[in-house]
Length: 121
Length: 111
Image (cartoon, rainbow over all chains, first blue to last red; front, side):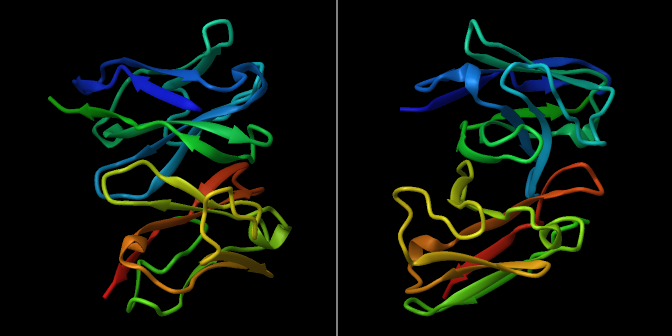
């Protein structure tokens, strides 16, 4: 059974940093692209950052470019999202997502349960 | 403002058929990039409903179907049930923006 378990969310002040983790199990992690997708309270889904199976290729939405860094450790079956210079508009539930297809245009076949990030003073 | 436009809401009575549109352009749906659909029940993570325009993952009832034509795609739900009440999102790739995009989402209400 595929499981994606996010952790690391919480309350952080504007300008602060947070690192999200996603522990994956139930599939061969190192052959699938992965992604982070977020959803602000009461809003729709936003594709934040996907990463290729090897970790060698990444993409960032304009809204987070230069502030967020996606990475993965295939030896630990774990996906990460380092979030710096956080803003109020980054407040959202962050979902870890397993992709089918290329990291740049794949679709999500499994989602984690999400972790809430709240940016507020 | 998403490059994929969905109606904010649709509604239907139990047993009826509803459709949800996803309108794009020549840089996404019209450029032959696949469209995928997700269902998000209240308070839960999204779930894959339709992939690659018309395909249902294992376990998704055949009441759900997808289609694509030109610069638009549609999700159809027949035999509407109370448990279908949810938010629905389309997703595709946009070559102008260079990334994956979601539609704004459609809230389905079962009357």
